Structures are given as C-alpha cells and as structure tokens.
Image (cartoon, one colour):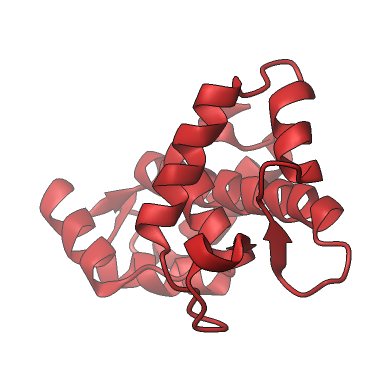
Length: 162
C-alpha cells in the first residue's frame, strides 16, 4: 500500500488526477486540488489550500495528491473505528457515555486490547478531555459535573492522539 492507499485506490485516484491534469504537466493547481478533493468526498479548508500552495510552489503533483488523499482516507477509517468503539458504550444512542469511576468505559479502556490504558493514563486522558471539552456543544452541559462524555469531542481528542 503506497501512501496508505490500496492498489485499487491508487489507480482510481491517479486516474482522477490525470483527468484533471488536462495539459499533462504532472501537476495541478491548489484550487484544482480543492475541486479534486471535493469530487472524492473530502473538503480542504482555505487554510489547507493556502498551505498546500506555499509548500508546493503553486503546484500539486500526483505524489502530493496521493499523500493528501491517503491521509484523509486513513482519517475517515479511523473515525469509523472510533465511532464503532464509542457506540459499544453509548447503549442508548444519545451521543454521550458515562465516564465515572465505575463506568464500563473506564473498565474496558484499562483492561482490553493489546495496549490498554493504565489507570494513570486513562485519568490523564480524561483530564485532557475535561480540559478541552468542558461544555458539550450539543447539550451545553459541563462534562466535569455530569460525568458524561460527548461523542464529537471524544473523536476530536482521539484523532489528535492518533
């Protein structure tokens, strides 16, 4: 897997890039990159596009594109895995899970998998969560007071850790 993509993905994305590279220069502009990414279901922010333009001297090569799309595809796959894992604990589908000392979430995170959190690592993780997401954007509740973790904020924190 080159660029974190399967051979099939590499072929499909290379064809899409080459279709957009009408002059066959081997490069596209950052704005064309934005269009190409949108056609593949990924949106780049204006800041991402400015950064890409600055980093690539105004052009984006096929290798650049495959690296960018590969990272995005990996992020999507990781988000799916995290959502599936979160859903195990969100038994009522509310988007929130309990994180108190007796919670199943705490028990699972500190006992299962090849590299479970130690109790100290889990406590550090939770303190980071509470510091970064003190009030849920969805329900406007302070996480520290009610002991509930918001799915969206959990995913943001986990993606920064990945």
